[in-house]
Image (tube, rainbow, N blue to C red; front, side, top):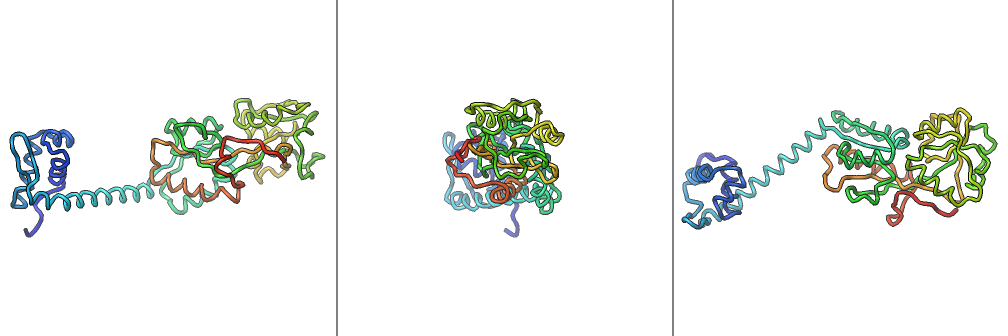
Length: 317
């Protein structure tokens, strides 16, 4: 032949009949009628100048030539499919969209640096960032509103895979003018008698803080409560009390505040990536996922052993 006078649909028809060993089933798998499938096979045989299938009223089988031609046909279809997938991935990295859900402290403190690097590598990709409570982040990922999330809950959820990134301690946040501002650490038991600012009981952070306070003989009183960490920081800046918050919540822009370690016990939360089990990450989301995974451990978070990768924990010290 001087050139190929057949197309990919005819190759697909041959492979389908060979796999199904039935014209009827092969036609159904390709969403064709049996006569349309027979015409495709006939055109391919005419182009090659030789029969590829031996047909009877009850049976269909490849001829010797058909068997010889089948594997090159499979390879041609497979190679084209791989090329299409690579092209689709490349296009997605040029013009895709990523949905990322994240707890606010990480969104404010860590993500700007990561997203700046991501934008430099993939300037055509749009990123939609949803920052919210731990439960809201988890819901965004499980509901499909976000491709993946950064959270400290989700390790026990069957619909997501929790990939631990590292440990983040809770600290006591106070104005720089406070008497404790120069201390290296404060024991939880010393908070009795102090006026505290607290986050809402709906916050995942509040659950861990309440666990730390549960066994104290004298518990501090929260005189002011804010829905989110940002609101609690504003109240501390206003001089309304002290707050136990995640360390990443205290950004450099809070110049009037200082964070002091809380000990006896040390309270930490484990931050991790939450990825849907049933949905593979699109190319652009996978690229951002990998950049986040590389950026957070070490600089921002302490290492965490896999066995301790839970929603949060108390440690002695």
